[in-house]
Length: 132
Image (tube, rainbow, N blue to C red):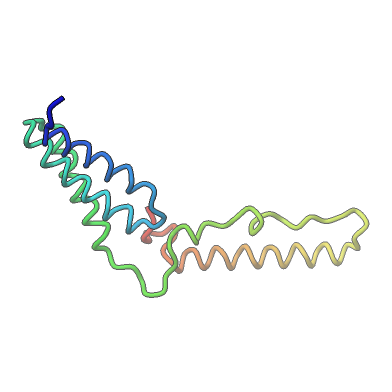
């Protein structure tokens, strides 16, 4: 078995791309993936494989564009803006509860839901924010 440096380059690129998806933050995923794509560009050029180097070069450009976008200071990661089931589920009300207490719990739930929606828009939600 002989050592083929070009094949080693392809394996290293694959490992970097694989490791990038183990990261927790979008920034780390994109930076590590960018290095993997760069190795794939070199690998594709050595193999004269346009499909490999062109795709990975395009991915590098996409990563750089997303990494260069400035995020508002103190803005949470987009994943923080996604509500959990407990936050949006209506409160459980028993049959024995008095009607005024049911109404009050539903009113509070609606206020929390509306506040969540306002925070989502404020931090770049539905109307053209920083989310993907």
